[in-house]
Image 1 (cartoon, helix red, strand yellow):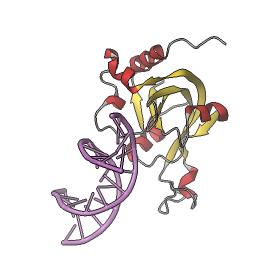
Image 2 (spheres, chains in turn orange, blue, purple):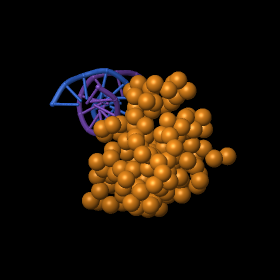
Image 3 (cartoon, chains in turn blue, orange, purple):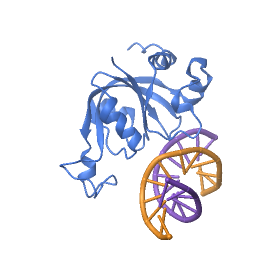
Image 4 (cartoon, chains in turn red, blue, purple):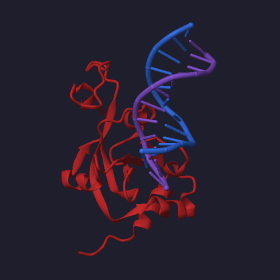
Length: 157
DNA sequence: GCCAACGTTGGC
DNA sequence: GCCAACGTTGGC
């Protein structure tokens, strides 16, 4: 059964528009064990993903992606020049894993944090929880659908 | 830039 | 295995 996810990114580092341009990307640099475990053990190809812009104006869900692959060793852990370099990790036994995400849709407007908070059906959503810092987390199918509904129809060309 | 929240590290 | 210090996240 396919699952649904929310992943955070700071758009000054990598934005939904960047994903649209690239088509797909490796979700590198996540260095939190819980987030890693989700990407290594629970994400599956085809899963749907909400892309959330944090430390942004406005903050909120900026679009949709799909999991192309999961449990992929994160190459940045081996890159000395990367901020995410991990000298303790080896290629034989990598510590960090990532997902590969595929662009699906850029929302016409960000579904803002305020909008998410105002939506009763999203009251239990992880990203709204106080003090939440997890950058990869599951969402329920209902939450996913509610966010897509808030984004509205795709504008006509 | 502030600061609350919380994960990680390391001394013991 | 405790827990204080420290670093990071992320909204404001």
